[in-house]
Image 1 (cartoon, rainbow, N blue to C red):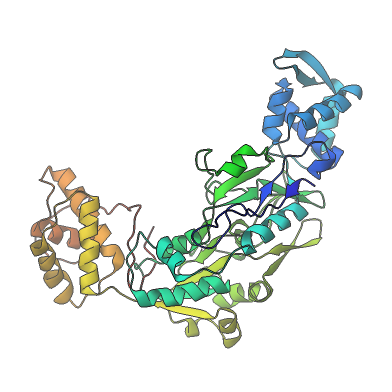
Image 2: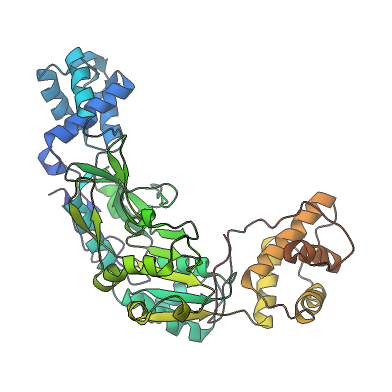
Length: 467
């Protein structure tokens, strides 16, 4: 066995999850890697083909396999006259290079796949990891959710919608006006599940390599962020520890993103979005505005939402079953009933309306935005903003407005060299730029709202902030 499940008797995470529910043990020999000798041979030969002369320990680093395993394989390849010692290396090692027969062998192996990344793990081991990390949790209680939402504002009643939705593991519809923090909410829900998970960098099944780790989606944890158990253990370097993923996809979503994407040149595959978001959250933002019809997307996920299993087809024609273990959120500013039929509504049982903030909450949000940018809070300027640009125009508050308008003010002050203060005339200029309305005769060009890393949610209503 190369994968061990370890249930730690220590205190679970505040959100009810065991942080050390799973860890991958380091394989001690070729058999324990779960890979065939031909697969490891192909990886070693392709590394040497690309890099030329390489030390054995460097090959081990490139493949993520222990030096003992690589040294064993290099001994076999040297006996077969595929590699030779180029010169001695430190720590009882050698530099290796391909022979003429070795280069011929490497070119032949590249007909199966072209890949020089970390060695893959068998699909069965990935399934074990998702089972352990996606389901091994105690029910989330109110105190857990309060802790996960500690950086945002909310009303007490709001918790009673979100808590049961997380515990159910079922789909959630977030609907309401845009700009109220749905993306931030999804990240908070991910945090409520625990801090980190292990994922393999690549998976292999039926001779096909599926690349799972994605820098644009997954955030690798540093050694300082990793907990003690994982650091003490000699873990399998083919695995990587990441923050629980929050995958956000909007109007660019197509059906291709939900299937294995095959690269015919390298004969490898890229994992679909729902596979990359396992053990985390998948947010379908602006649902209903994708380039594919809502019915087509929902039909694709009818079975996974019901059975928590998705079926993918490898280029070889083999069908594989993959866990569908994430909190999936559909975010839309349309009524769910106008997008989906009753059969799908039954499979997404939680519908949470994310409304606009009240004036008192908007004041709190605006004051927080001022504090973050080190602007002195001036209630009089805020009252001017509300009266002139909201109340008199019938314009609704949005949670993103406080952050965005304050960045407009800061941009103008930096451009003009004006004192960095919260003034009525600065807010007038910011509103003209932001809302596109002629609220003042003063002309300002070139200011734009820069996104802030922190968005503040609130009451039982909070929608996705435009990130």
